[in-house]
Length: 141
Image: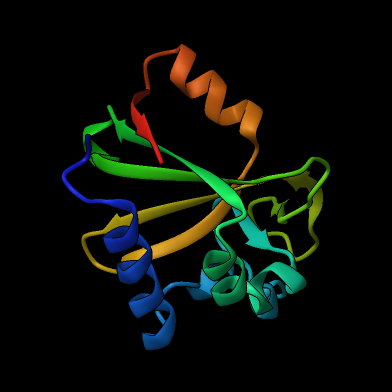
């Protein structure tokens, strides 16, 4: 499907967690008071602290997408916890330092500069991007 099986994918993500690069400063709740020029998402503190345990639990589904935008090309993995009403993070408006709203899925991407890293998003926003052709579903794990 994506050229990588689930165990290899999780292993690569675990390596990024252990290297301290999986959660970038932009999406780290410890840095919510740092301003950024554009909108960003920030993981909830509990979610940020429990990433290794969460991924070890296997209590989630993964949908693999290919991003159709050449600027953000490559694979994007949307990780949805099993169960409903789980808040994984929030948004922070451009120039802001206060979170608002709730986000319910993790998104894991491999950037050219940063490597594997994680942020949060709305599952409805992901679905909208897929419906508009911005994300092309490759498969599920």
